[in-house]
Length: 210
Image 1 (spheres, one colour):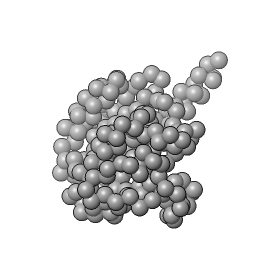
Image 2 (cartoon, rainbow, N blue to C red):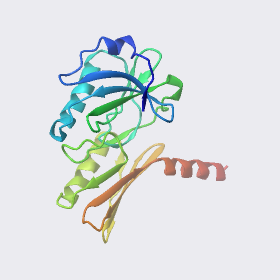
Image 3 (cartoon, helix red, strand yellow):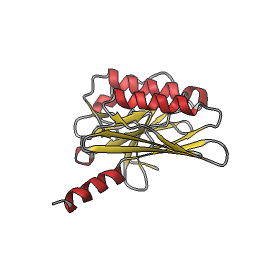
Image 4 (cartoon, rainbow, N blue to C red):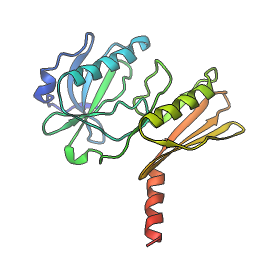
C-alpha cells in the first residue's frame, strides 16, 4: 500500500482521535482502493479496545451515518458521510487500522444487515468467516447467534446438526443468510455466513417462474 498524497476530508482532520491513535494519511492499495490509515497500539490485548474507541470517536463526531447492510461477525461497518466520500470501518492488523474511503456511487445498496458476535476480545471486523476454538461452548454460541439475529429482525429456523457439522438459516425478506459450521481436524469449529449465493438463487427462481 502506498501513500496516495491526499489528506482526509476536514471532518476527519478536526476529529479528536483516541489516545495512542495517530492518523498517517490517505493510502491506496494495489487495487486502487483508498484508505485512511491510522497507527494504533500493536498489543493484542488493547487492539479491540482501540478499535472500539476509534468507532466511538467517529460516532461522537456528529458525522451522518449510513448503514452498510453488511453480513458478518462483529459487523461495525457503518458508513460515515464525509461530504463527497464515505468512510468505513476496518479491523486492526499489526499496529495499523485502515478505514476504507468509498465513493458514494460505490457504496453498498441498502439491504438488511446481520451482525453476529464473534469470539470475545478478538474482533472479526465484519468478516463472514469465524474460527471458534475447540474449548468454546458451541451450544452457547449457537443460542446467542439465534437471539442476536432475532433482535435484528431476522427469523431463525431450527438448527440442523449432524456429525461435526451444523447449519442455521436466517430469513428477512427478501434476504436469506445461512450459517454453516464444520468441526475441523484441530477440534476448532469453522463458520461461514453466506448471503450472496442465496440472493442469486432467489433471482434465478423468480426469473424461471415468470
